[in-house]
Image (cartoon, rainbow, N blue to C red; front, side, top):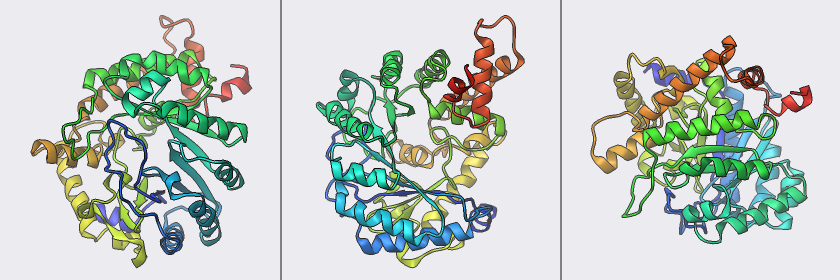
Length: 404
C-alpha cells in the first residue's frame, strides 16, 4: 500500500517513451521483439497522449511550469512511422502540453531523410543512434549492412547540426573489444551510453550472448579507465549516472536499477506500460491513454499490482543490502523474463551480483580519488576533478572550458 501511495500521490514527472510503431527493419541478434506487423500510432492516440502527459505534468510533485517534459520516441524503429507522423505529432505535443517539451529519438536512422532532418532541427530533437561500435563488431551482432546505413544517417544529422549521441549494447562477443569500441566513439567524437544485452522472455533457439558477472565488471572497469584517459573529449553518460547515484544514494541509473517513477511507455495503440520492453504484452499493461488515468488510478490497475507484488518480494529478498536504495531491486523485466524462461522462484534481477560488483568498485574508486591518495596514478588530480564534475552533474567536457 505504501508503494501505491508513493506513486499515486507523491510522484516526480517521468520521462515518456512514445512508441509510434513496434515495427523494425533490422535483425539484431538480441532483440526482445518481435517487431513485425505493428500498427502506427494514429493522430487520435497522439492527441490523447498529449492531453494525458499534460495532466501528469500538472499533478507531478515539484514540477514547475518552466521544467521540460521529456518525450523519447522509441520502438521498434520509430522512424518507420514516417515523416507524416512526426510532422503531425511534434506540433501536437508542443501545442497541447502546458510545459516546455524536450524531444529525443532512439533510432537506427535507416529511414532518415532530409525532410525528417529539417523537422528534427526545427523542433530541436536530440537523436540517439543505436550502434555497437566499428563496422565488424557492430554488424556481427546487429546484422550485415547495419553499420553503413546507420552511419550514413548519423552524417546527415551532423551535416545539419542536429545533436546526436550513440546507444551501445554490449554482448559477450563485443565486451572483450571494449577498448576498440571506445576508440571508435572517441575517433567519431561521439558521446555514448551503454548497456549490457538483456535476455528477452522468449529466446526461441537464439544465442543472446549475455555477459557473466565477471565480464560485466571487466567491461565497466575498462570503460571507466578509458573515460579517465580521454577526459573532456567525449561523454559516457552511463558512467556519470552511476557515480552520481552512489553519492546521492538515489536510484537514477537506468542500466543498473529500477525504472519506476523514471519513465512510462505508450505503445502504438495507447497502452501504458512501466517501460518499452513490456510493450504489446497485455498482461503487463497498466492502462490506456484513452481513459486519461491519473497516477493514483494507474497505481490501482492490475498491471501495476503485478509490479507492486514483485517489489514487495524483491524488497524482502534484498533486505540488508546497502545498495537497495540505489538499484531499487533492479530491473523488473529482467526478473520476470528470468522467471518465465527458467521457472525460478527468485524475484531478484539475475544481474544482481554484477550490479553489486560494479557499485563496490565505484565506491572504492570514488573514496580513493576524493581522498587524494598520493600513491595513486600521477594523474590523480585530473581524475579527481573529473569525478567532482560527474558528481555535480556537470558534463566532463567542461574540463575543456576550464583548461583541464
